[in-house]
Picture 1 (tube, rainbow, N blue to C red):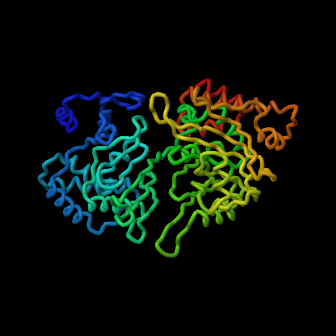
Picture 2 (picture 1 turned 30 degrees about the vertical axis):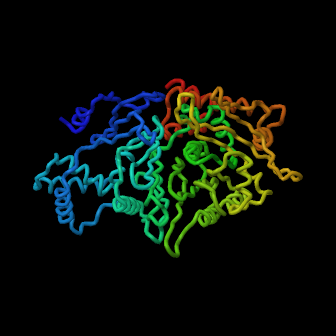
Length: 513
């Protein structure tokens, strides 16, 4: 019997074995097991724990005994000696497997050799007890609030309590320190709060020590996909409509400035990543981030990341953004504006650079208040350099599933000199009853009729040409969704085909797939 068979045999109520948790989306009652990889299975149950959470149980092979682990570590250290480790994590794993395969033949183990190798590599190279959660593609967030259970947000089942428990402060601190060292931004008592990226690209926030966190050290991991979510996936999720996606495509073709706004975990970065594929391929793009999350398909892409040190040498978003202005970019993408770098971003817009960024604001007035207030302090006279503010949020549908929706897209026209209020047009709005993103219709876009039309030399009598083009772009994107063209880079290739052969020819090509 395998370890998974042993686990199931001990259960009084037998779970259903499934390949994809999405088959249970919207279910109120479930008891199922799905496979993550060869040595990781997950048991999900709708049974509420005493804290009100549904249950997420990690099933792994049994570990070697503590004395066996000590012996493995000693023999491994001797076998490796002073060999310089490979640079890539894949090559490190290959070296570890090769070394362990040799030394474990000489050790009497209480578990199969493959199980011992799995646990050794999981603990030493990867994220230890959290590795199964990081490998599960259906998890969005991982949270250790202190001592006790680890919690997650599941893409299908929402917030859940896992079977992983951190029992002592020493164990918790060791885990935090070990993980932070793998990010090359280690925590310490001098630098107890760190934002970083794990080897797989996931964003992590560490808080170290009981002196600043009463329940002990804590961490939060925001999962990251190496291949970004594509615009066609966002359309299929209902986050964005084909017409809205086509509108953004048209705007980015013309170099418009756009902020993706919303609350924490509303999907801002995911949306920013997806719409980046609409930027023309022959432009130079610079991305500026605290932790690297943005992926750009363009060849001429400069990716810059902040650096934090305990002394001199700290590089902030503000410094990178100032430097970017000397590098002649066509588009600057800022991971998140929250400080004085916002002022530099608007100066960049003022001097003709196109800027996109994410921003924490729930509506247009909150956006302007935050931009003009301390510490960002953008002059109100600069606000109209921002052309588009897109607002999205996370909410629950009628079945109780967590969904993300764009709820409003505003075109910023100016600041009223008398009232000092922002003058804007809401070109798209969300209808929660119908769960649809509604376009206000022809004549409702100031940018199409007063900026794009002028740039293209189209007079007002022929303005319908631009709305016809908008609908044709939407038809193309809708067709990609129908044909299940969801991979980010496949979508990019199809957009390039539009640029090369035109919309009508590209539509004929996709229809023939």
